[in-house]
Image 1 (tube, rainbow, N blue to C red):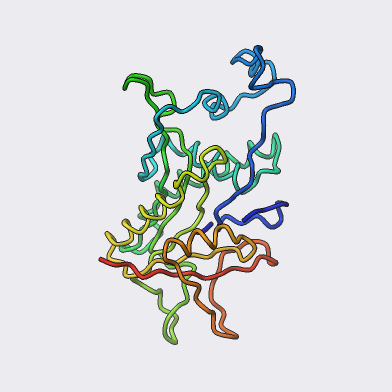
Image 2 (cartoon, helix red, strand yellow):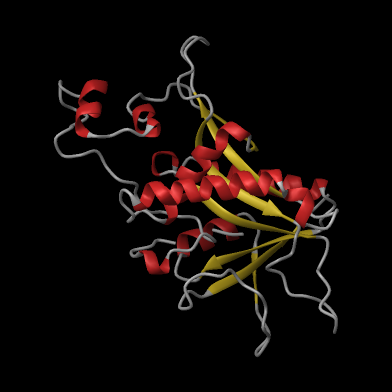
Length: 257
């Protein structure tokens, strides 16, 4: 399902690359203060492990794009919620993370029971690692970006009078990169990995929907070779189920073997 500079939650879509800043440190905890420490974090009420990791500078960062593992799912849920629902606060944000975590885990465990045998859907993560002299590795496995790719064709136009499912075309959705790791080429790495996976599935093309109000995401995809496809007038092509006022570009790229 796919990847908007967003200013309110009613227009947030999970089918765009998100460029919204995550919550900042509370005013009584200053990163440049001599009192800034793990203890001050505890006293200020911050309890998320991801923000503790953000305290430490990443030395020689290493980005590994791979399929999500079971231990990645909390990071996947948190990245999704931070990027697409930044206005949510406790307890709603916590409940949303739990919801996304459960959905992701159930989808992974039950995938083979509810889809045709030749259909696949995987979540890719950009995991960040760091090292000092090859020994220190605090950030290893920290999820900095996510992307979903499938060949299920839920959001591709059907073919023929019987509206058969279209085959040979992969679909990208839910592209998100955390604020601290943007403009480092991570989204491009995720897209390249998705395209490689699509080739392994035997797909000849790959498609996505992009919010018309997100020019940065549109430029990103165009830079990777995606072209906007004009939807025929009156055609009812499927598109992501989001707010009714959100309009999408349908984009596609032919894959070279």
